Amino acid sequence: MAPYEALYGRKCRSPVHWDEVGERKLLGPNMVREMTEAVTQIRQRMGTAQSRQKSYSDQRRRMLEFSIGDQVFLKVAPMKGVMQFGKKGKLSPRYIGPFHITERIGDVAYRLDLPASMSQIHDVFHVSMLRKYVSNPSHILKCEPVELKADLSYEEVPVEILLREVKNSGIKKSL
Image (cartoon, rainbow, N blue to C red; front, side, top):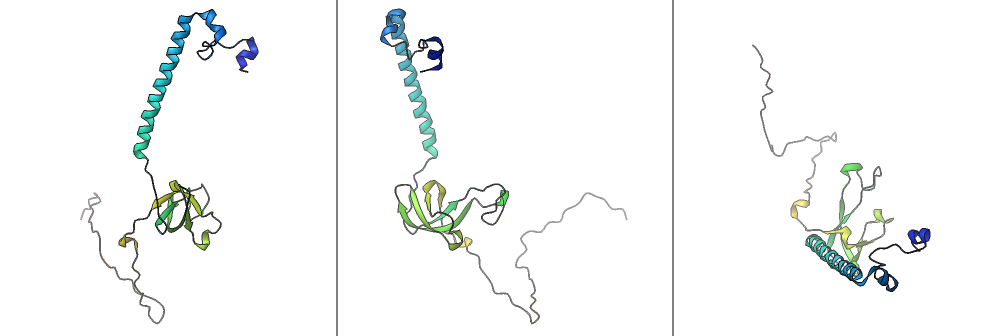
C-alpha cells in the first residue's frame, strides 16, 4: 500500500488510478478518456526519446570479437594509492599486455594467457576490458650489445642530435 493510501484511507488521484471502474462514475467519462489519451501520448513520447538516445549511444558502440590466438591489451583500473603494475597514481598504465587469447567463453568473455606473476588474477575477462593489439615493428626495441672495458666501465656515445636551439634569455649584458 502506498503511504498516501495508508494515511488517508483512499488511493491518490493520479492518472494511474483514474482509469479504475469505481472512479469513472465520480470523474465522468470525458475526463477519464482525456487522461487515458494523455497517458498514451506520454508513453509514445517516452518511447521516441528512448529510441533517439539508443541511436546516439549505438553510434559509439562497436561489437568486438576476437579469435583464439589473437593478442589483446588488458584494461586495468588504477586504484588510488595502490601500486599494482609498476607505477602509482597518474602514471600507472591504463592497459597492460599484450596477452594471447586461449579460449572464448560465451559471447562476451575470453580467457587470457597471463604470466605467472599475475597468477592471483582471474584469467577470464569481459570484452569491454580488452583492446586489440595491432603489431607494429616500431614497438620492438633494438638491443645493441654494450662494449665494456677491462675495469667494467663503458663510454656513452650519442647516436643522433634530434633538436638544437639557441635561446636568447632577454638579458642584455653590458661590456
